[in-house]
Image (cartoon, rainbow, N blue to C red; front, side):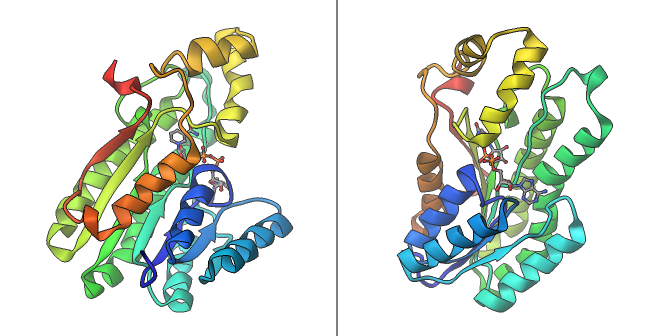
Length: 260
Ligand code: NAD
């Protein structure tokens, strides 16, 4: 149980992050949600989790592309929850395009949100973790932290980057009771995957059915999508005391993708 812990999960209004926040709240952790979306829907999610699990659930609208907002979010979580013991860097966006057509602002946004935001949250949250001599940092990387696919230059670069940041932070914090790991899912059926189907259809000149069969599930030997609940259960395990000797690891959950 994580009843004595508080967690901050970036990008948790949807998809994997929401499932992770939910699973942590279910274990009794206080949680700060973050991400974009319809304010009324987010408030319903926040209040629903708090009521269902009887734990503190807060929400920050901080933009993970903006370092000052990230620092303020961590400070607010520490102040209102009492600590940030578990930091889950999960916010992420995708863009599919050949390099020569890749919009420069999309490159900058992906590097900022998928990679640099984790540096900014860590920078702000590590002092408290060190002072309490306990912490868990879990980064949502991707199979694309280990292998590449064409037309995803910024995403693959950011995910390889977060795998390196994870290892570096793990070494720096190894004697402080703080573990740092990343989870590398293959294809998980979330809005992020759904949204890239039209661009992939364009980039590869394929129908929707061809993209799902020949691009998405072609990469995954099991021919099944990973579920958000499966990713969340690994995050909960990494946050537990049982996982205290797992640090600097990049744990794949990809239906065999990176074994091939
Ligand atoms: P999603 O689109 O469902 O969720 C993304 C979340 O990030 C949302 O809550 C969104 O509001 C938030 N977000 C986006 N930009 C933000 C910003 N600037 N500031 C704050 N929050 C922001 O996508 P998902 O599939 O759940 O992706 C979550 C993470 O998992 C990402 O890092 C993604 O790269 C990674 N991932 C996804 C898959 C997959 O197949 N879905 C596979 C591997 C890794």
